[in-house]
Amino acid sequence: MHYMGAPLSIRFDPELLARLRRRAQALPGATVSGLAQRLVDEGLRQAEHPGVTFKDGPTGRRAALVTGPDLWEVIKTLRELDERGPRAVEAAAELLNLPVAKVRTALRYYLDYREEIDAEIEQADAESRAAEEADQAQLRLLA
Image 1 (cartoon, rainbow, N blue to C red):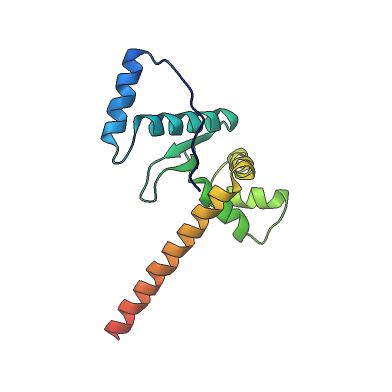
Image 2 (cartoon, rainbow, N blue to C red):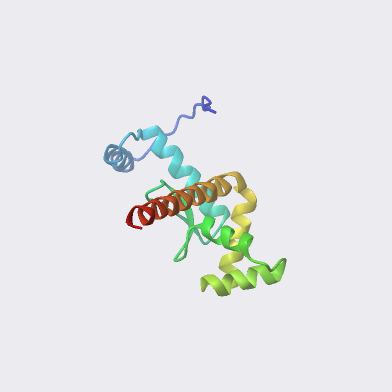
Protein backbone atom coordinates (compact mmCIF):
# COMPACT_ATOMS: atom_id res chain seq x y z
CA MET A 1 0.00 0.00 0.00
CA HIS A 2 1.37 3.40 -0.97
CA TYR A 3 0.31 6.45 0.92
CA MET A 4 1.10 10.10 0.68
CA GLY A 5 3.17 11.21 3.65
CA ALA A 6 2.41 14.27 5.70
CA PRO A 7 4.61 17.21 4.71
CA LEU A 8 7.23 18.49 7.15
CA SER A 9 9.39 21.52 6.61
CA ILE A 10 12.83 20.98 8.08
CA ARG A 11 16.03 22.98 7.79
CA PHE A 12 19.27 21.06 7.48
CA ASP A 13 22.74 22.35 8.11
CA PRO A 14 24.16 22.97 4.59
CA GLU A 15 26.97 20.41 5.00
CA LEU A 16 24.53 17.79 6.33
CA LEU A 17 22.19 18.41 3.40
CA ALA A 18 25.12 18.11 0.96
CA ARG A 19 26.10 14.77 2.57
CA LEU A 20 22.50 13.56 2.36
CA ARG A 21 22.30 14.51 -1.32
CA ARG A 22 25.61 12.76 -2.10
CA ARG A 23 24.46 9.63 -0.31
CA ALA A 24 21.10 9.61 -2.14
CA GLN A 25 22.90 10.02 -5.49
CA ALA A 26 25.13 7.04 -4.68
CA LEU A 27 22.14 4.76 -4.08
CA PRO A 28 20.28 3.49 -7.16
CA GLY A 29 16.72 4.79 -7.21
CA ALA A 30 17.07 6.75 -3.96
CA THR A 31 15.67 10.22 -3.44
CA VAL A 32 16.82 12.73 -0.85
CA SER A 33 13.45 12.72 0.92
CA GLY A 34 13.17 8.91 0.79
CA LEU A 35 16.66 8.49 2.21
CA ALA A 36 15.99 11.07 4.93
CA GLN A 37 12.78 9.27 5.88
CA ARG A 38 14.55 5.88 6.00
CA LEU A 39 17.37 7.26 8.14
CA VAL A 40 14.94 8.90 10.58
CA ASP A 41 12.91 5.69 10.82
CA GLU A 42 16.01 3.57 11.42
CA GLY A 43 17.37 6.07 13.93
CA LEU A 44 14.13 6.01 15.89
CA ARG A 45 14.04 2.21 15.83
CA GLN A 46 17.63 2.08 17.09
CA ALA A 47 16.79 4.55 19.88
CA GLU A 48 13.74 2.47 20.84
CA HIS A 49 15.67 -0.82 20.60
CA PRO A 50 19.26 -0.40 21.79
CA GLY A 51 21.45 -3.14 20.36
CA VAL A 52 19.69 -3.14 16.97
CA THR A 53 21.29 -1.81 13.80
CA PHE A 54 20.49 -1.94 10.09
CA LYS A 55 22.53 -3.63 7.36
CA ASP A 56 22.48 -3.70 3.58
CA GLY A 57 22.49 -7.07 1.89
CA PRO A 58 21.34 -9.02 -1.16
CA THR A 59 17.73 -8.82 0.00
CA GLY A 60 17.88 -5.12 0.93
CA ARG A 61 18.02 -3.33 4.29
CA ARG A 62 17.29 -5.41 7.32
CA ALA A 63 17.41 -5.15 11.09
CA ALA A 64 20.24 -6.99 12.81
CA LEU A 65 21.86 -7.23 16.19
CA VAL A 66 24.91 -5.03 16.60
CA THR A 67 27.79 -7.50 16.22
CA GLY A 68 25.31 -10.29 15.62
CA PRO A 69 23.03 -11.96 13.12
CA ASP A 70 20.00 -10.53 11.36
CA LEU A 71 16.97 -10.39 13.64
CA TRP A 72 14.97 -12.70 11.37
CA GLU A 73 17.61 -15.39 11.95
CA VAL A 74 17.23 -15.13 15.73
CA ILE A 75 13.43 -15.29 15.54
CA LYS A 76 13.53 -18.21 13.09
CA THR A 77 15.84 -20.07 15.47
CA LEU A 78 13.48 -19.40 18.39
CA ARG A 79 10.53 -20.75 16.38
CA GLU A 80 12.36 -23.92 15.37
CA LEU A 81 13.35 -24.91 18.90
CA ASP A 82 11.47 -27.55 20.84
CA GLU A 83 11.90 -25.41 23.96
CA ARG A 84 9.29 -22.84 25.00
CA GLY A 85 9.26 -19.88 27.38
CA PRO A 86 12.44 -18.65 29.06
CA ARG A 87 14.26 -21.88 28.19
CA ALA A 88 13.76 -21.12 24.47
CA VAL A 89 15.62 -17.84 24.84
CA GLU A 90 18.48 -19.60 26.62
CA ALA A 91 18.58 -22.41 24.04
CA ALA A 92 18.60 -19.95 21.12
CA ALA A 93 21.38 -17.96 22.76
CA GLU A 94 23.42 -21.11 23.17
CA LEU A 95 22.76 -22.30 19.61
CA LEU A 96 23.58 -18.89 18.10
CA ASN A 97 26.51 -18.31 20.46
CA LEU A 98 24.94 -15.07 21.71
CA PRO A 99 24.34 -13.62 25.15
CA VAL A 100 20.76 -14.16 26.36
CA ALA A 101 20.34 -10.35 26.46
CA LYS A 102 20.87 -10.14 22.68
CA VAL A 103 18.20 -12.77 22.02
CA ARG A 104 15.84 -10.78 24.24
CA THR A 105 16.70 -7.63 22.26
CA ALA A 106 15.72 -9.43 19.05
CA LEU A 107 12.50 -10.68 20.61
CA ARG A 108 11.51 -7.18 21.82
CA TYR A 109 12.13 -5.76 18.34
CA TYR A 110 10.09 -8.58 16.81
CA LEU A 111 7.14 -7.72 19.04
CA ASP A 112 7.09 -4.20 17.54
CA TYR A 113 7.85 -5.18 13.91
CA ARG A 114 6.40 -8.66 13.59
CA GLU A 115 5.10 -8.36 10.00
CA GLU A 116 8.45 -7.09 8.72
CA ILE A 117 10.45 -9.89 10.37
CA ASP A 118 7.88 -12.55 9.35
CA ALA A 119 8.21 -11.39 5.72
CA GLU A 120 12.01 -11.68 5.92
CA ILE A 121 11.69 -15.22 7.32
CA GLU A 122 9.27 -16.16 4.53
CA GLN A 123 11.67 -14.75 1.92
CA ALA A 124 14.63 -16.66 3.39
CA ASP A 125 12.58 -19.88 3.50
CA ALA A 126 11.52 -19.42 -0.14
CA GLU A 127 15.13 -18.81 -1.23
CA SER A 128 16.25 -21.88 0.70
CA ARG A 129 13.58 -24.05 -0.94
CA ALA A 130 14.53 -22.74 -4.40
CA ALA A 131 18.22 -23.47 -3.79
CA GLU A 132 17.39 -26.97 -2.55
CA GLU A 133 15.23 -27.66 -5.61
CA ALA A 134 18.04 -26.43 -7.90
CA ASP A 135 20.52 -28.72 -6.12
CA GLN A 136 18.16 -31.68 -6.49
CA ALA A 137 17.65 -30.92 -10.19
CA GLN A 138 21.41 -30.86 -10.74
CA LEU A 139 21.83 -34.17 -8.93
CA ARG A 140 19.13 -35.74 -11.11
CA LEU A 141 20.97 -34.55 -14.23
CA LEU A 142 24.18 -36.13 -13.01
CA ALA A 143 22.57 -39.44 -12.03
